[in-house]
Image (cartoon, rainbow, N blue to C red; front, top):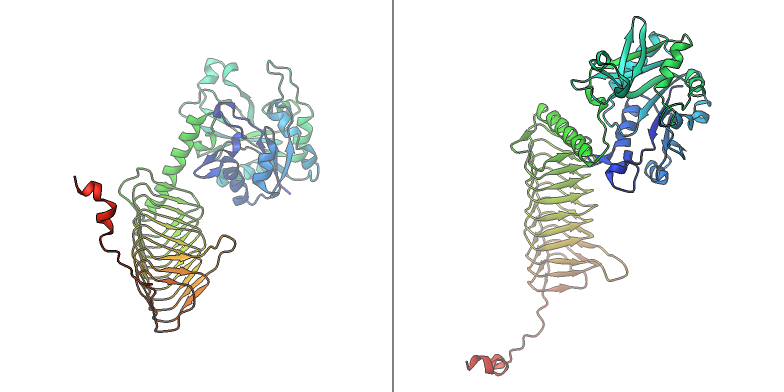
Length: 458
């Protein structure tokens, strides 16, 4: 079985944060997750993550999905892979892919095609490379008639070697048995006193084993982040790559200011995404919808022909033909059914809003089941929390809820119930009834003359 070792022990001091560098996010996902996804898409599931600085954060993030091992001391890339030797020894008959956890753009094509070359050439090690216009700072690949003869680092390269544009990506395929053997022969006789994984190439060649290189057509597999500036560049690149994909699929963008779309998002043809819109966590948007400006849509399913203007929506479903906004908050667990209209300063939480219902403005609907063609007057509140438990309200079809109505849960309104403005509902109301609670109006004549006498005399 083929294995993967992901090096994720980097501290990232220049990031100036107390967390492992591979957990810094690109388009909302840790760089480590991008690398894992590339492996999974390539059919590789036997993965070991080498952790280091604050490794408990790596464990917490993975949640037991994959095995981890600790590199207690930072003694180089070779030393990091050494920590995974017990994992490798479980099955030495296959091949092992070694990847960097902070190089998020390694792609499944490069992984799969490199393995094919690796097997065809019967290599002990195959380096995944890319060609850069500006290779400064990267290890150069020295080609030979039969494969490669080594990797020369920038500081050690001659002028002729510095002109080479093919560079090491930091990703490798090994025969697993050869990797274990080569790791045991690494030495730290260098200025840094570290064990370099690149030295496995020269050791393999010296022993008469085959070493080769697969050059990816995607130079972006090289990209990584050492500081916040680099991380911004990764996010900018990934952001535009996703937007370009949607443009090719028939999505309209008239302005990209503030637009961020995570790679897990799906958008139907003919939809328009306006400025300031952020789409996250597997959100799906149907055809012909208009999202924005200034929307945050997180893990939602949005139907066809939906209009969202200045809306924040989380973990909810919004069906076809809905119009929402501006300044609306859709909280988790909500289902907004087709034809609903929701206006300004409305909050919906953990509720179902039935077809063609109107919630025009200044209303809170929480923990409620609302029927079809209901009309909410301004200032309506479902009073769903008594300080100890949260309870639900049920509102039947065709109800008319007067302005400033309070529905004190648990309470049920039947079909076509009317509530008078200012009414507080504390018990169930039967079908077709009018609920009215106005109390007794008291008028104290002359009150303000007496209260404000000193001011009114001036």
